[in-house]
Structures are given as structure tokens and as C-alpha cells.
Length: 596
Ligand code: ASP
Image 1 (tube, protein in one colour):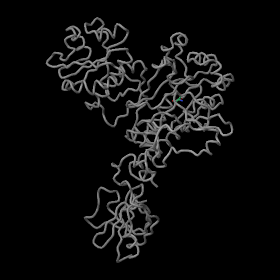
Image 2 (tube, helix red, strand yellow; image 1 turned 90 degrees about the vertical axis):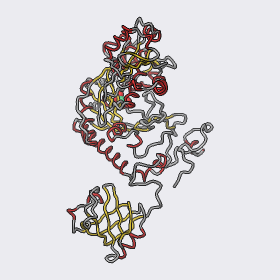
Image 3 (cartoon, helix red, strand yellow; image 1 turned 45 degrees about the horizontal axis):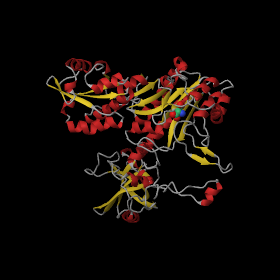
Image 4 (tube, helix red, strand yellow; image 1 turned 135 degrees about the vertical axis):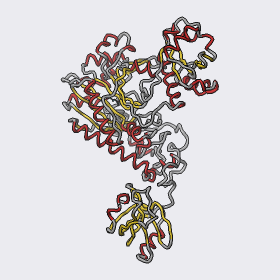
């Protein structure tokens, strides 16, 4: 391989093949840097020694593919390149064959920092040649391989579940596949193998896993694609602790194998409620402190109406201390900072500067001396600080302040680099109310067990029911979730009822699962971890598109293949479909011209 020829090969005949990375003519000789994924090696063509090879070299262009035979020698003194692993040697070429030619390329290969993402995705096969994608996809390979090895060692069996299935209830929109044999009927692509993995437990495979492709028809973001890959697993006869241990072992081992970073285990556990109060988020970034403070206790009789009003109507006042924040100007606080709080539902962002032992700012005069003193003590405020507040329904106030905390962290560089803070967030609520429709929905999915102490609330006060669901979070990113499952048909029926599913509907959608639970289901639970997201974190990228070989653009198209594509009437008729009018003009792949 190009990158592995070294001084130990001096005097040896070698054959290498690869792409022309660079070509220059110098002092009557022709030099080519030949590249493969292992690196670059310098070839020297001497017209006096092998005129035919030199003639080939002279007409070679960037990204042509060559095969050469030659002899390894040390580079002349003074022309070594200490920055290159092969920088001490070169290959004196005897024979050179052109294996293929290349047109002028639309993006640079060796300089992989530049190029528009659209161009990169349109010519993904060229982009894949670049060091960044080579590094990322090889790390991904190592990660998945290490996961498989660990799963195998722990007696897990990989079972392939089907990809044409009935709709699964993971809460997102399904991709549907029309059935030709049953016109008017559809298959769905799985949002997860959830039901099948539970049925495998009933089938006596007590440790199932799969590197599973899943599909969700949702708007795309930096950390979301229509199709994604997860480490999916399920285990029988376990409780939460055993599931935590298995995942900590698998993921920490694979993380170290793939990215060379040790991840200490066990990971801390943080109940959902505590995460919300301390970080204003169910996926807290714990790489830095600067936790939120609930200061409702200080302001319950406050003259500052905004605070007092929020508390008397059952809400909270949340505060954040920003050391050094006294330097922030009003314009910035009432611009960007306020906008962050508003985006997360808070009506406003109150703040005070602390300078020379006193509080300054528009609200300072409404806060009594006693309140100021208590605040100073609770938050440990000092001169040069800023303290900001959100007030309102507890969840809104906390979430908005959690977002402000992250904003402050970026603004004041609180986040240490090269740290991976994995943790478990536990005891998620079982149900949540949809703000728009007022309907109760499952936070995780309807097969999740309630906390054993909360069964009595299922029918009466569903929003207070805690679940036996848990997430893995790292650096503020949710990496996966799981739960212990319900296995008693009567209990499953009670949950369906709480979710507003009629017995007929429940039977129609999940009858097969309930039936299975009549035949000795073992107690079980499981987890699914997002492989794309973990690899993204591991290699230090900020978009999962950087760790997926052929992703879609953020607008949900593929500029390389020009898809999705229109479909012929014949094809539609065959599957019994007729399409409505086109809603969007133009090419969904986002390119006027599909290129080659
Ligand atoms: N099916 C769930 C998901 O994909 C994970 C699980 O409960 O195991 O998020």
C-alpha cells in the first residue's frame, strides 16, 4: 500500500497502485505522489532509465489510477519530508500502467477542509476518497465490529427482523410501501424492530441484538436522517441494572476500540426530574457545572410581580449564575439571550449585574434587600457576575433556562474539549400531554412498564406516572433509549386504555403481541443506541451526515442520484396507487442538473 512503504523496504522491488495526488516535473525528472487510503508515496520517473514509464507519467493527470513497479530507495539528502510517514523514501519506477483516467475533479481530495456540502454529496464517491470520510467511515466500521464482538462474547444472538412490517408505534411518521398483491394495503418500514425483538424474547432467545436499520419520515436535522442505524438489543430475566451494565460494557469497549478514548464505567444515573431541575434538560450536558438553581423559595412573597405570580400559580423561578457576565451589555442580553429563552417558551429573561457589592439592572429595584442577600448566598454570587432568571410553569422555566445555560457555556467557553460525559437519565415520565391536542401520549412507547409504585395513577393522574424507561446521554446528546416492558395482557390493556386506544383498535394494531403474551412471556427489557450519533461524537463531527457513507441532504434529497424521483404511471398502477398533484415545484434533490 502507498502509505506503508518505508525505509525497511530500501532496495526492494515493489508494486503499488493508487490515485495521482500530485504531479510535478523537476530537473528532467517527473515526480508523482501516489495515494491510496493508507497514505501517499513519492514516485520518481527518470527518462534516462525507463523512457516509456516517464512518458506515461508525463501525461498522467490528477486522480488517474496508476499501477507501478519500481524499487524503493532513500530520498537524496535534503529532500526528505519529515511531515510524511513515507517522507524518507521514494520509488524509482521501472514500469507504469494507467488503470483508469479521470476528468478534472469538482472538489479537491487532499485538502478536505473546503467544498460546499451540496457538491460533496453530489460527488459523494469523490468525497469518500478524502481523508476525513476515510477516517470517519473506518472508525464507524471499527465501532460496529467491536459492538458485535462484545455482544457475541456476552452471548447475544444477532437476529435479523423484517423490514416490511405493520406500522410500529414509535411516535414518528412511517415510510410506507404499497402492497402489489394486496392493492389498497401497505407495509411500513420499521421505525425500530421493537415488536419483533419482544417476540424473540417470547421465542426463547433471551439475549437478542441487531445492528438495525430504521426509518422515520421526519424533517431532517444535523443529527437526524430518514434512515439510521441503531444497536438494538433485548434481554430476558433482567432488571435495569443488568441492562445498564451490558450497555456500559459494550459501548465503552467499542468506543475505545474505534476512537481510542477510554470511557470510564459505570456511568452516573440521574432521574429525569433531577435532570430537569439541575440542567433544564432531559439530555443534560454534564461536561461543565453551572447548574440551574430553583430560587422559587426566595420569591414567594416578592414584590416583583413576575416572580411572585409565577410561584403563586404553581410554577417556578429558575436562576443561573454567569461568572464574568457583568461584562455583557444590555443589547446582547435583550437580543440573543432573550431570544434563546423565548425559543424555549419563556416569555422573558430577567437579569441583574452584580457590581461593587450591589445589584444593577431594570429589575433590581423590585428585589428587596433581604431577597438580594438570600440570592447572593444561595447562588454564591460575586462581583462581576450576571444572574438571570426565567419564571413560569416549572417545566417551561427550567427548559428555557437550560437553553440559556448552553448559550452561556458557548459564550464563555465553559465546555472542556475532548471529554465524553456519558450518563443514564432514568425514571422518565410514562405519559405526556400533547400541548396542541391535549391528548395523552407515551413518552417512550406503549410497551414500557410504569414504575411499580405508580400503577394506581395510570387511570387517574397519568402525567405523574414514572416509567421504567431510561436514556443514554453524552455531552448533551441523546444517544439512545430503552425500557423494561409490560408482559401482562391486562396491564398492557390498561396502558392502551390510558392512551385512548379502544380495545378494538388495540386488538387490530397489537393483537398479535397481546396473543404472544398469553403464552408464557419472560420478563424482558431492552435498549436501542443510535450508532450514527455515537460515531459522530466519537470522531468529533457535528453532523451525522459526516459518518454516513451516502446520506440525504437536510432538505431530504440525494443530489448524487437525483432522488427521490418521479414515478411512471405504469409503476403506480401496478401497485394500485394514484398520486395527487405535485405539492413542491422543482427537483427534491436540490440540484437543477443531476450531473453525470
Ligand atoms: N424501540 C426503542 C427505540 O428505537 C428502543 C427500545 O425501547 O428498545 O427508541
